[in-house]
Image 1 (cartoon, rainbow, N blue to C red):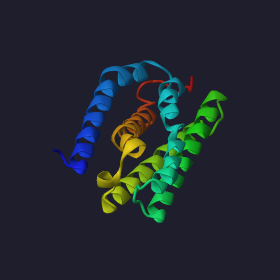
Image 2: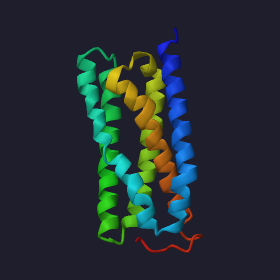
Image 3: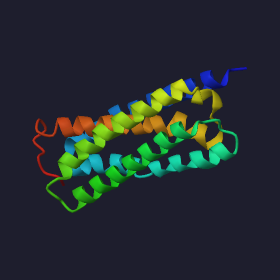
Image 4: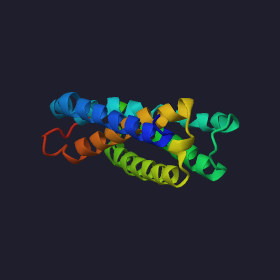
Length: 168
């Protein structure tokens, strides 16, 4: 029988492989062909659902042994990421001048938050404790968040090279 931590790590690696493959084969080529706003909008929508981290409050009530401080940092970091994603979506939709700087704020905040959550998860052995929805979030949704934020950063960084300075 496979240990919980090993199973979670295998599942997470497989999710990264699947998301990265889809990104390389489908997302990146399409993102190169369209304006910046159209390229990053679908990826920001993935982050608009980060409020799913609120489930940690109920998971903790049903036996997920996560310290309150760790729970709060993960939950509130994800809520900030969600708000930044939504704000960026609105800024892109309505072509506000600060849309691109806001997208960069989203990228930086998301990388910091996901890195912090990963470090806390390792420190607290959360892979060994996660079950049900928490396990699914760790092994499926988190890799999707990482791959999508990398794609957003890549497209923001290369926007001048592609000749696509417009938002839409």
